[in-house]
Image (cartoon, rainbow, N blue to C red; front, side, top):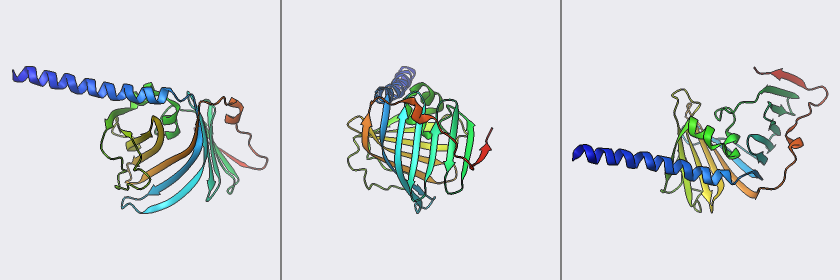
Length: 216
């Protein structure tokens, strides 16, 4: 009887995990394109804010993204599925590296709906408790209706935990906790979903006179 109970418990646990993954997949697969504003906060291991920034973003499945930080300092991150450009106007420098589906390198891919890649990289569990980041900040999170906790399957992952928070099936919060004890928290607003977006906006033309660094 104990063995049967254990088997049933194990079977139930596996199906819960599978259901959580499928539920997240259903939410993300609806996002063919996403446009909106973001606010970003970087916190240290003590929960103190190190840096805050804001800007606009555009994401198109399966991996196109444009992340335009506008304040306090401009910076542009662009991917066209072949290359990723990081442009810093103040430094007059652009870094180019090959495109990768590695979410550790490009967390914006979480918004692209590639649930297969996400499932390969992370364990996915839906949490019905109050959504909070690792520093237990609950400001701006009171309206979150559901969130998912993602933990890496590989021990050498850059991020030790990711959280995705939703309001009425639309993603509103993303929190990334890294192996250095720092937490990056994103809040999204003014979301526009599934508009037709020309892929030309995901091409970056290097300005004249800018230093180019190739990151292989």
